[in-house]
Image (cartoon, rainbow, N blue to C red; front, side):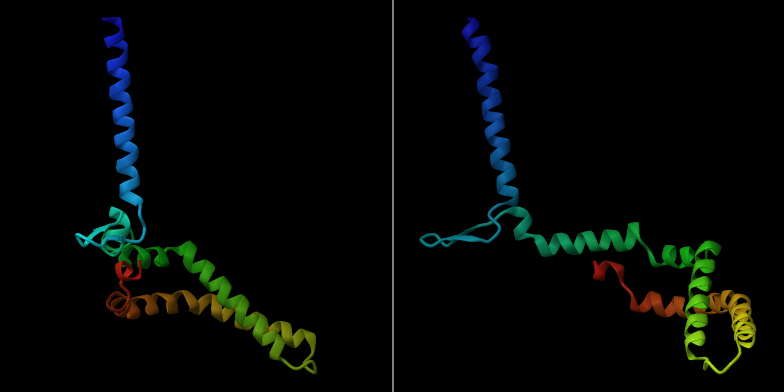
Length: 150
């Protein structure tokens, strides 16, 4: 009697463990299909077999639910992001202008000129970014498809 009470759960646990191991291995393996020649039967893991279908579905979920283009455009409209973009553009343009200005130009004139350019960029760039986002948001929505990219 005690032997049955002890062995039944052990046998059940062993059967469950073997079944789970076999099921998990069959989900992922074999990666490449194995063809049984006589009956022309293909054996392949579930995930490798449906890789394209899974990738399409995951791409659609990411594109439609997790990361939408409207969210991306809204993020670009936030002031912190605009300020970083303006700073980066201003820094790049000022560096390029500083490299291009001949050495014959006095340092004070150079600094005044670069300061003016920096000020103009700081004033005009946020409005320009807003216009670009409004102008290109429709085009971006038509041309970029996150689900297809994923």
